[in-house]
Amino acid sequence: MKTGKYTKDGREMQVGDVVHFRCKNHPLSGKGVVFMGKEVDGLGEDPFRIRDTRTGRNNGRIYPYYDDAVYRIDGREGE
Image (cartoon, rainbow, N blue to C red; front, side):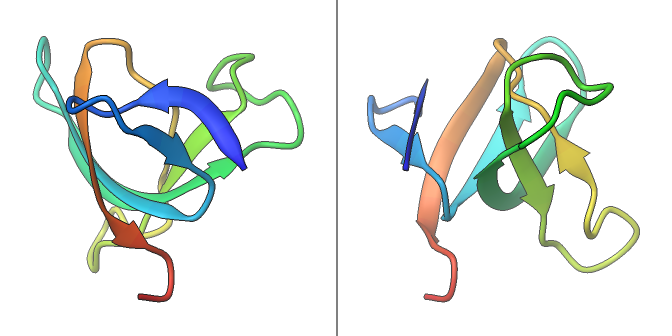
């Protein structure tokens, strides 16, 4: 499923992609699997979400799409 969101090299991120992001204007980064939220939550109306897959305290954390972030696709979930 396409999301309408693109990486720094112009590739469209899709549901199931494993992506890494780093914000330019504040010290926030993450790595996880792209999914589309089904309900409006406290992260905004845009349903684009990333579920953090790193081990440690941020595992499972949900991130919205950040306009000022640089995104990179590292693979697909399950690869």
